[in-house]
Amino acid sequence: MGKYFGTDGFRGEANIDLTYDHAVKIGRFLGWYYGKRLGKKAKIVIGKDTRRSSYMFEYALCAGLTASGADAYIMHVTTTPSVSYIARTEDFDCGIMISASHNPYYDNGIKLINDHGEKMDEETILMVEDYIDGKIDVPLAEREEIGRTVDYVEGRNRYVGYLISLSKYSFKGKKVGLDVANGAAWQIAKNVFNALGAKTYVMNDEPDGYNINTDCGSTHIEHLQKFVVDNNLDVGFAYDGDADRCLCVDEKGNVVTGDHIMYIYGLYMKERGKLLNNTVVTTVMSNFGLYKALDKVGINYEKTKVGDKYVYENMVQNGHRIGGEQSGHIIFTKYATTGDGILTSLKMMEVFIERGKPMSELAAPVVFYPQVLKNVRVKSKPDAQNDPDVQAAVQKVADELGDTGRILVRESGTEPVIRVMVEAETDEICEKYVDSVIEVIKEKGHIA
Image (cartoon, rainbow, N blue to C red; front, side):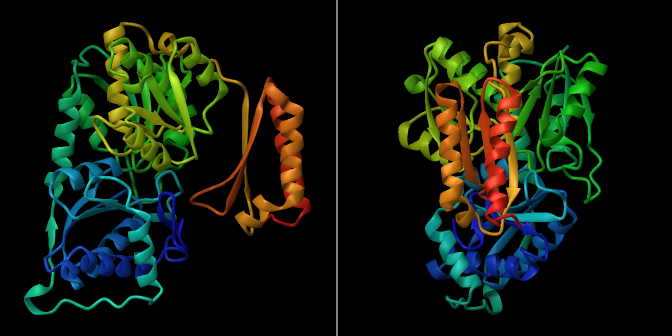
């Protein structure tokens, strides 16, 4: 991670941590780097979510891009995976997504995507940061070299068409609930499911700039759980603010996590001879229950650091086809280069329809160990993480749990937060051990 960019872009409170000036400079650098530096005019596509500040950052990026000579293609409100898809299929030099994903409305972020639809490489990110800090000089475009903005809503429409084309089945007769989190998926998801014939029930589809992720979406899935049961739906899907993650709710109102999704679709691929390398890629945050279920059906797995970026890198390096995170970032490398919530829900519908079984039955083999995860806001993530007393407390928990559970303490890639997670045989044991480590972090003065 760099000075400004974490594992998922430059993220922070709008105009405090991430400012208008930052956005202009990011645009200025990218417009030059992909354009005049190479003796051509850069072509860069931009999408945004529904936060009020997204409009400000959109115009700031466009000002920077065009001032450096690039043409900026504006997709308006759209999802992160749609920008990724368009960047790799429509001959763009790179893509930019304005979103803070599942964060509250007052935060925002700028995600950079390369021409293959992947997260931008670290080398380019570090050069962007050097320009922000005044270490690199970038010339202004002049006269006929000044760039332009292009309304590119057709890019979003092409992405919708692509999603529809991926479905093997009609959804006619299926009652599907969608929680679009007052975010980027608020129009796209319903249009896709309607086009495929589902009887679609949508909630949290009235974004006002301030209600994105507020008590809704994949981070507050309890509302979709009730919605599915109250309306007697077959299944429900919840997205986050930029729709790169998806969680599911079965017909009984139970949550189907990213771990369940990887098991369900991984087994489906294996049974059809499509699971290359017989392997599912997970992160260290996946539950013991997933690994036990995969062992039972003879599917191998790999574990990466937390972050869909690391999952994707592993998949590309080793030729694996499915991977993801418990939080709902699921990657299908045959169809996408990033997590895509709507795509994930379509693939789950495919298994649901072909198997002819309720979602609760498909998910049943994954029996979760109790898990408690608590976030601790700290002054310095490295200081808290590397404190010898904190490390000793973590090791003590690990020793006491033995093979009956595990502890994981890690730094957030996007916030000033240390995450303490314990899996064990009961919730009480988890709580006790998580709190014991957090108490040491407090005693050592690391709490912000």
